Image (cartoon, rainbow, N blue to C red):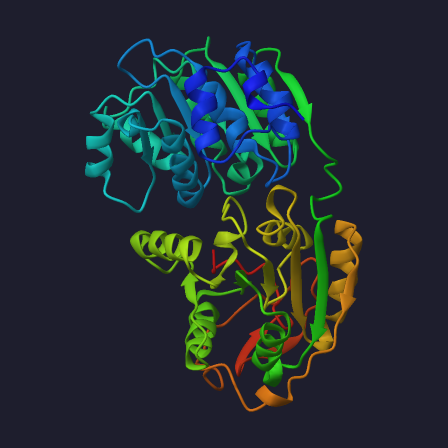
Length: 423
């Protein structure tokens, strides 16, 4: 692999990378940065955790600033990813933080308008807020020279294709466009053909084989009554250094946090029901000193926190591909990691589906839950008073029928339907 010092970068860019602890380029960086520096459009297919952020930020930092209007725009699907990239970008521009602005929904638009009034060269943001600020004439797009679409497949899955088309139409046709995506569905290819000029293509790894080779995959069976005891048994046996516990709903996230706290185990939740300020604080505290983060799928993509040793699926994910996104939060940058999933007897077949579709081997482990057998998840209601989940038809890989989860009736199996309220 190449050293950044060998890539014809400005000394200040190499120095900033070194100060952040990065001297050697990853595969995607080594391939993408030289092409981007030539001013060519570029399509990069690579999984999360491969170093894509530096692959587009380094070319941006290498450019000379021509005017006072924004000249580089990075569009991302979520506010969490926007803030993460903003943190990296400001680290690459020490002493010039005002030259980078981050904009996203759920935060004060007036504050973001003030940051834009300082004439940043680089703007990082989510599609909806970018359009809001453009419509208010607070954000100029007619001087954009380099535009990045990051996590393009996720943006289209979230329904952002029309906003992205609108943003692209407001930027100069002479701009350079860099598109990064973990997969290449037809919608992504269509955008590329319509809005990019003879782009170069880079593919890192196989689209069919997720980047999970450094992860050890385990599962254990548990019925509803002993599910939390199984979680405690895993924590006691494997002693995770830093872990994300994934659940399906906001309510279960809060309950798991409350019950862990009752056992003297500090944990913080993150889900769509929290204010943006609380979500940012939870991520910051977890990154700095936290041990357990209890999250819905809102944290399954675009969260890059160093040192995560374990991913724990308290609830089996809705879809095999979601499993990959969840476990991709560990084993970052070729580190090792563990992924542990708790399944009910009725979900046992899903282990085979996950393993087959993602080309992973999931080994069953035995845990001693006896010391924790009397501990139940706090806050679970009884009967029909709780949250209804799922739908009559069930998901494409879960059976139909009636089931119960924590005393809550749910039509469509244990978790029928692609339940997404926890995002």
